[in-house]
Structure formats: structure tokens, C-alpha cells
Figure 1: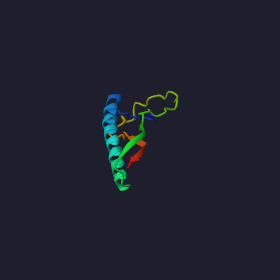
Figure 2: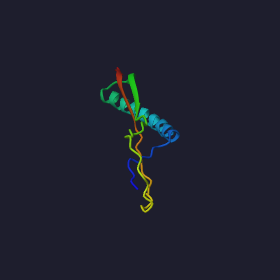
Figure 3: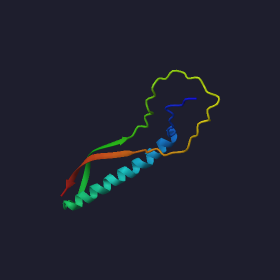
Figure 4: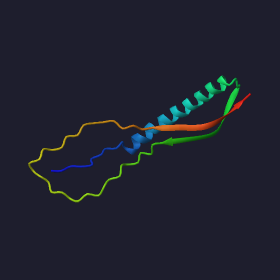
Length: 99
């Protein structure tokens, strides 16, 4: 038996939940950093001028087309083990310092 290009993905529901939590954390971190930057410049406050939230999209890998292969009954069954998948969210933006 030949086996190639086996992939496992995070379920859409689990990815959506993880991205929701990460988005809230990333926005909070962006705002915290904005406060730190404002304080470092001696500003009294800041306003978010622009912001962009980017997630990894959960795009499935591209699968090459393969021709059918005959099964070899003497081949051992494949073994699979759990793994990890990174889910990421990035927040970028521009702030305006108030004096």
C-alpha cells in the first residue's frame, strides 16, 4: 500500500472559536501597546486611526491530483498520531496621539 499527502485540519467550528478568542486578545494587546506608546511620548491619550485584523484563514492545503493505486493487502495499516495546528490573528494599525 502506498499512502501520500495525508492531512488533518482543525474543524471550522473550532477554528472560528479560537480565532474569536485570539482576535479579542490581539485587539486588547494592540490597545495596551497604544497606551504605552502614548505615555512614552508624553501624550494624554490616543485614538485609533486605522486598524486591520488578519487571521490565517484556515485555507486547506493544496492537494495534488494522484492516480489510483492498488492496495497491497500485506502492507501494515497506517498509524496516525494527534498533532498541533497553529491558529493566528494579527492586528495592525495606526494611532494618533493626543496632547
